[in-house]
Picture 1 (cartoon, one colour):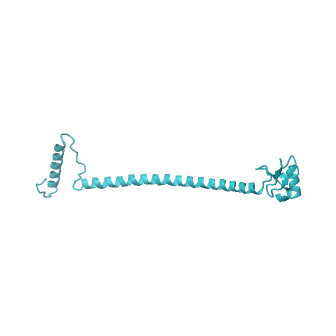
Picture 2 (tube, rainbow, N blue to C red):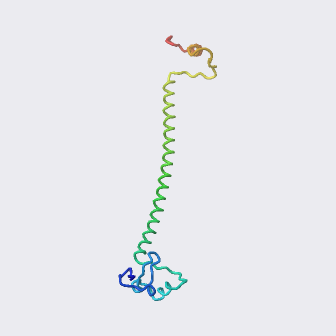
Picture 3 (cartoon, rainbow, N blue to C red):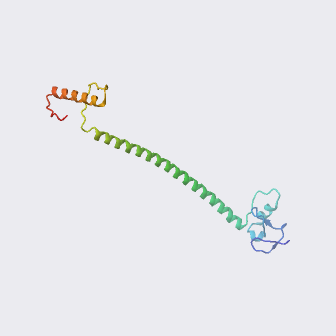
Length: 154
């Protein structure tokens, strides 16, 4: 079977030429662009250099670029995940704070006509209506002591 140079497509003799370390196809020494010393090193049994044909060199470069891009994409994914986590945590905090403020405003609205008396014991016995009547009686007594007139609508 005749073998052909990967670069010029002419016949090659495997024992005289160099093979690509990636695709294993042969290339004429002249077509490879290697020096005579590099060609001799590639043919030695304990060689320490590698040879890649132009196609495989491009492929290795593309693989290296792909690895770099893959790493960059992973780094960006990690950054986006961190931002999502941070934003999610912040959103939860904002929702909690908003709920707390709304609840406070509702409580203030509900109590806007309340009177707060300190150091007066609460009436906890009886029905709710008994408790309200007891609170009203205490308020009237305090207002009377302070000499504040009160209409009788309470």
